[in-house]
Amino acid sequence: MKNAFLSGIFLMAIQLYSAQTFDNQAHRGGKSLYPENTIPAMKNALKMNVTTLEMDLAITKDKKVILSHDSFLSPELITKPNGTYIPKDSGFYYKIYEMPYSKIQTFDVGLKKLDNYPDQKKMKVQKPLFSDIIDACESYSRELKRPLPYYNIETKTRPFSDNIFHPEPQEFVHLMMKIIVEKGIQDRVIIQSFDPRTLEIIHKEYPKIMTAFLVEKVDDKKLEQQRANFKNIPVEKFKLYPNHLNGVAGDMKFLSFTPTIYSPDHKLVTPILIQECHALGMKVIPWTVNTKERLQELKNMGIDGVISDDPRIFE
Image (tube, rainbow, N blue to C red; front, side):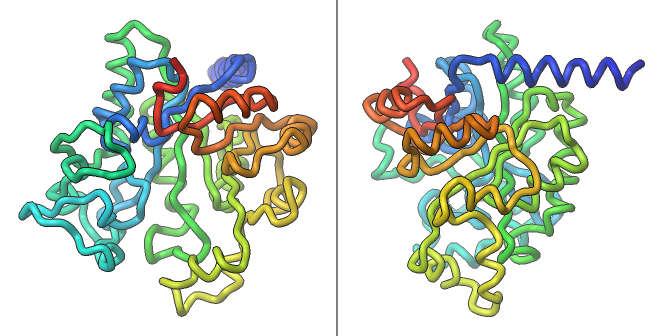
């Protein structure tokens, strides 16, 4: 009886999500306005016309699940404990998977001024635990008396960086899902990834969880850029995820199932792409759209939602 009840809740949640007219997603919490992937960013997004909080996960040396877009402490964002910056060419020396969370907490992610995001508020803030983000967002949503948010969570894994920047997919998914289940948010979670392996695990072990297939165009030039820092990794490892060189049909060959969402770089979106995805039963939610003009263009084509750095475009 309990399992039937839970299955009913999942079904209703997915139906509710599918019935939404449009999904406004705040990319990394809305990095145009607040430091990305932080509690202040997520709480600010909850005060705006946002349906879904988009975020990225990484795993620390001591197996803590934290929010971070990069698998290392990025020179673009980080202020060191002594107030200096990480040199631009040394970010890979600060691999999150090689650092305990207590050490990561000594680095700041909100003080450095970003030229590309002049409106971003500057503040002292650290990379948070995933569990703390969920607690803060659930509590703040209730305080605001707004609907509880959906969470679009990216697994930051790639086939060429297993055991370098992150654990292998099975362990990554286990650590992430343990928290999702403990917090009871399974019915409002989308797991997104460029890496088909993590989506396959989710589909097999948690079939009721919604999934999103992230897609970018990877030509020979892009492939060489990706290989630049992984000289000893076989080239085949870099070809184990979609490259969009053969369109939607080519991308879907990397999965054994049809995900809830097809999530491409917004520059790849065309009316035909949307038609192909809808014919397969997938929503189309592109990234990263940061102007009202581009948002309207994509809406006119028929997209189902959008991921944006700037939640102000939803107003």
